[in-house]
Image 1: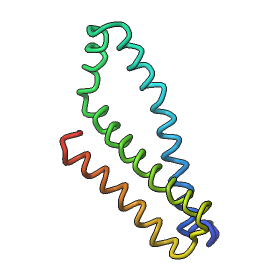
Image 2: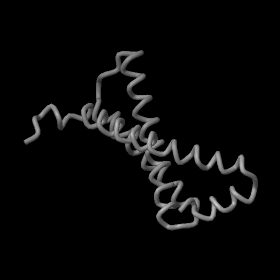
Image 3: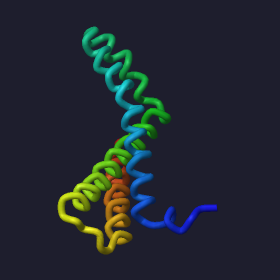
Length: 114
């Protein structure tokens, strides 16, 4: 059973911020592999990029863009709390961060990113 403190917007924002950070950390080794294939020449990079045409990889790219937007928006929220002692209307701020990040993910989808 979850305590009422776990249902507060600040706690949920912290959990989302950590989950998106872990998703970004998991992405980094794959990014370094892609960069490493580029050092091998255009042919090796092209053979690696063929993999990105899979629906699964395109869905993962959408997830990555959305995770990056969530992490950035909630990170700015944390900075505002630390630097400016902004603590009022926490639910509104967290909802705004998540809505903005969702809008970025939706724009990526609509722009043909997937």
